[in-house]
Length: 183
Image 1 (tube, rainbow, N blue to C red):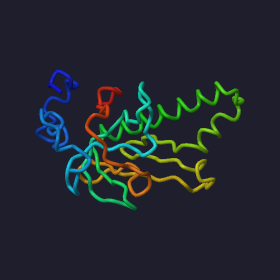
Image 2: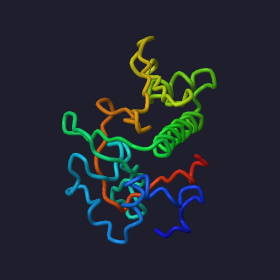
Image 3: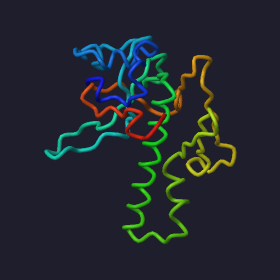
Image 4: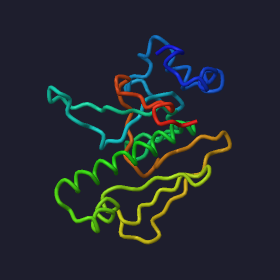
């Protein structure tokens, strides 16, 4: 990845953001899932992200850069920048939109679509600097709303200790902030 591949506002991130610096290194072998340890930078994806490629081989097409801070029941817990958190929120919304379209294509009545999507997937949104994870439909619990605040360094743990995240190979398509119009 060259500097030309980055959003113009991101050119100086490597001085403030070790994850960006690691992505700009030509040798990315240190990002291999087997080398990720607590405190190291890695690429992470949800266990739900596996899809078949054109040859039928399973792969994870989307990964998010972060720093591993913990493990939970064998799953990765990572912290990330606001830009990466925005990309996770946008990707989740895209998944919800795709599922809604699949349901529409199956003939699910319009009045049932939102309920069916909410019963299958969490809804992530931003409220200022806070991520709101609405899982009320998923758990049939009117109080299943989680608010994820950034830490003092402005970093987020998006659904850590809740969703099943795993380190993935560097060949996953990294979702960078400019792909979602994030600032």
